[in-house]
Length: 84
Image (cartoon, rainbow, N blue to C red; front, side):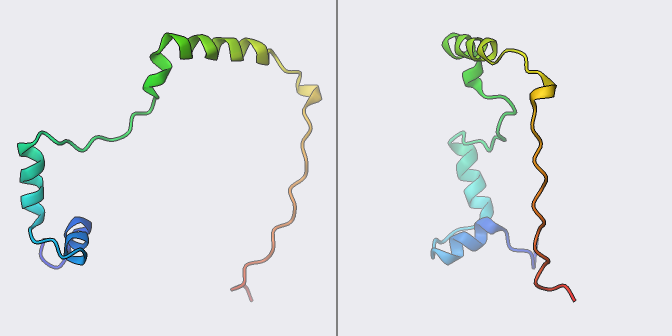
């Protein structure tokens, strides 16, 4: 897009690295580099030792009695500086 530089192009220009956004993506494609989003679930949870420790922790927590919960009132927040 003309007039809308990408963060990648801006970072390259700032570091004085010659090239273009398309050249970078071609490099990624040639070397099988993919941009992946983070998973919603940690893969460590699938490990047996982690799952076992998790189950043990949950058992130790037990059930809680809502009558024993203590709720503290929130402290008043200061007014923003820009308020009139």
